[in-house]
Length: 107
Image 1: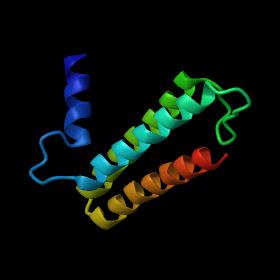
Image 2: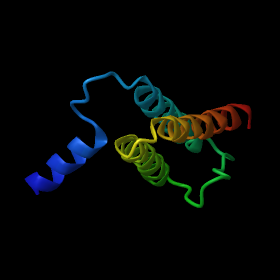
Image 3: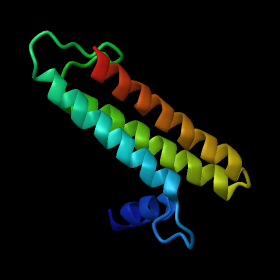
């Protein structure tokens, strides 16, 4: 188990020599999207339209999974010499979360 955790932390980039602001923006925006959706789900008449789940735990799992996938995808692409493409993956994830925040706040 320790090897698995160490591998995930290493692969995700814990201990990178340089700062990764897009990663932190991605995590922050996804967090805001998750919290906003969970709060709105408690109001009568609100329905999550983009996801099949209607539970806060499902939304948190979905957003957490996509955040992890985009961060690990960015790290993998960077390790293989495609750092610009990796940044694009992060920006797509941020854009998707931003669209979710905008949709949730207007409906």
